Length: 143
Ligand SMILES: [Zn+2]
Ligand SMILES: [Zn+2]
Image (tube, rainbow, N blue to C red):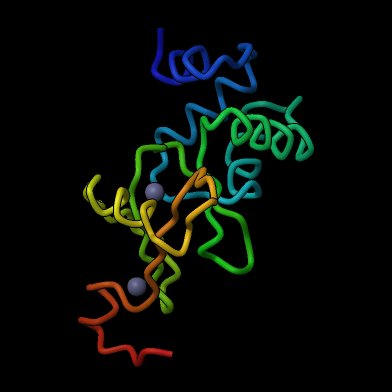
């Protein structure tokens, strides 16, 4: 069974050709694509795929915690098939999104924040903004 199928089964999502294709895309493209990116790249080989299906499928994946929905980019929701805890860095210049590891104990600290007494935390997102090493090397000025 390919990785995408395995992940869908694990998360209790019924398999369909389109769901498998979208999950497969997310697992293979670590670029944190938008729904539009996914639609644009998959539709040529899947003429029956509609934009609505892509949006609905991503919503379904997110409801089953099979995908992370990132709000780091204020213009578009970005999707991540890698669902283990990690932080993101968004470059203000080239707009690339990078994965940044966060140690489990750091997640535990964030969850144990005393300001959250009485709250139940479902997820923690840590976002960094700035310039990536490549843009730093090109001496771009930080906006
Ligand atoms: Zn950059
Ligand atoms: Zn990520």
